[in-house]
Image (tube, rainbow, N blue to C red; front, top):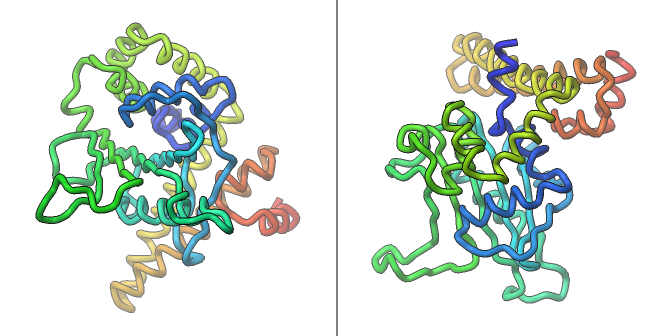
Length: 296
């Protein structure tokens, strides 16, 4: 139970996605994005479920949490990362390049590529800068104010730095980050009291985490992550006899496969819809159907 309480927070990718992509919660996402991007959003639309194609079958950086279209012709990608599993700067570039390339239809010119904003919310520190909210642009190395490539911006929000620097939420962005982080309940209560939309988000969050199927789904997903990590460490230890590099690769392969399959089997036993299992595990639907016949 303690483990479930730990993982069922708004910054969990499952809870975050369900909370902010739900029909009727567009106002929550709109205010949150307006505060990060510093712009007025007149129209917001959650894009269909996406899985960015992977460059390698063992590559873990293929899924993203939310893709949003704002003001008709701009794209926002939001990615939540609780653990430093792969280089987030490279991951952000990977998402941006895939989605920007896919947004250009046959017959269109390069100037019709949509503006893009990539937002990475991290539960760990990545950058050496002091600021917890960093927005980046591509500039000339000598003349820093001269933007070389326009049309794309990257935002990195580091929650540990936020917790260290903000003790009382004073802005709307601080209220939202306090709620998403959900580490200091006193601060969360302040954010709820100060912001009606955060109060609405809290009620939605209580509904999501109160649903036993969602709680079980989220718990099993986290269990798979822990199983994967344990298998990876075990494989790495065994692999030292054959060399550190071989052991690390072996542990990663074993961990990924074992963790995903264990999660799929548990979800099937709990009668979770197979489409949800695809989202949860990243496994192929046809493989899951075979697994259903073989294992369950």
